[in-house]
Image (tube, rainbow over all chains, first blue to last red; front, side):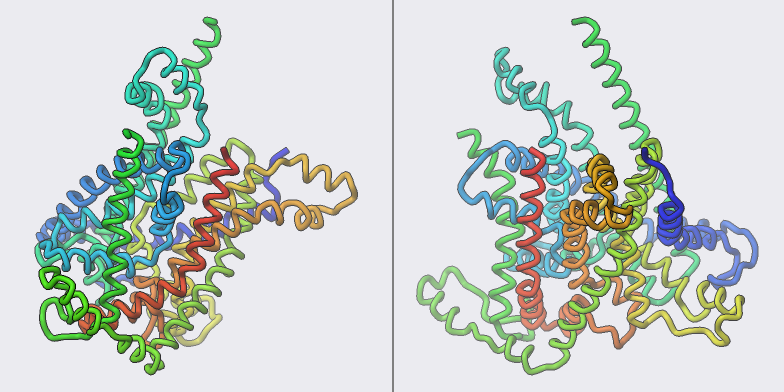
Length: 272
Length: 296
């Protein structure tokens, strides 16, 4: 029987307090009316107002959003194909190299990835900007997508796909009407992961960007280096809020989808 | 035929944007610095043909590596990065394991929520979470104010810009990477093994060390790799929370590149960092492959 013991409750409470109290303090103090970030001087939303008038931040947010959407879409397509290759292709020439290139970027220090991509772009003579950041982000986040998708591919019953082939589907049709709907939740969470990784990235973007494109993390980093400021607190709170709402909606949606699927499976079982 | 085509799409992409760039870093590490754009010589000119290639090769040398070897700063930075990564991996394990254990032991209806609570900070910006600690650890920060208020200390402690702040930042950011793989192995652990151990006369602590600890090893190993390897090259945490005395190689590389604009030396730093990490990275890959095969 699983239950909470005193030890388990203590370690979980302390652990989660450690994870959440700093974020909570940050959010609360974004509503502080004083410029001094550690002295509470009353409730105010003026920093949010100032933020919305700061054109540099708005421009950076727009660049970040563009990069995030393009790179996560490319990463999802490539990562899903890579997952299929890893799980289904069997042995092929250079398989070890392939899986090495999938797993290494997950742990590779960002400074190395960033530096090496920058040198590639320079030696090709590509002009750096939104395009180059998109390519860089798509490359490292496709590896995350492929890990997420392959864990779903491993656990699903391959005979379903074989049945579709036996019933006369082409391999592509079988993939489209059997495999893809089954792995769809993993593909969607892979996309979300790729998107947030891209929104988040400072180091790789700093290396691969040019003067024309400044992303939000680059902007935040240069502001933060000068110290803590209430505008940055307000901006952080907005970003945290958007992410929290997104994650909660996504998890509710997957939960509902799971319930729905279970009901359908049940119904199908009763018919037979 | 179609299979080869499908394999080749991600394969070629990764070769072009992951493998070849490393080759360029190696090449640049062997070049000399020059005041131009790009700020290094020689550059490989394909139109020169075979003679041009030989000429290009003859200009490469180990000068940058000799420079790294002779300058103590770099060795100290490598050593202290590995040391900081090692200590913080152990500390993260020490905090992460009880959390993962508590999650796996929690009632079933709680587990999804706890899992979500672990993942949620991971979705929030890394930079923002480090920034949150700047406000807490600074001399007028919340931690110092709290300690002054309780009377434990008489004057503010210098925490920010020290290695202590770097450790706190690393543990804070990398904790979910440790908890998740350990939780995944503990959750699959069959409770009847523990019951068997207790039936055979083990105390609960003995049963933990005899059954739970060895069976959770794959998760612990994966978690330690996921923390250790990226932390060795960490840049943001030492740059925002560390001080001038915090030596970490990721920061040295960044400064060499962006402040000194010495690209060849920055590349040589990256090459040595990669050589330090290549064994842990290969071990990590093997471990992941084994874990995937175990599931099929």
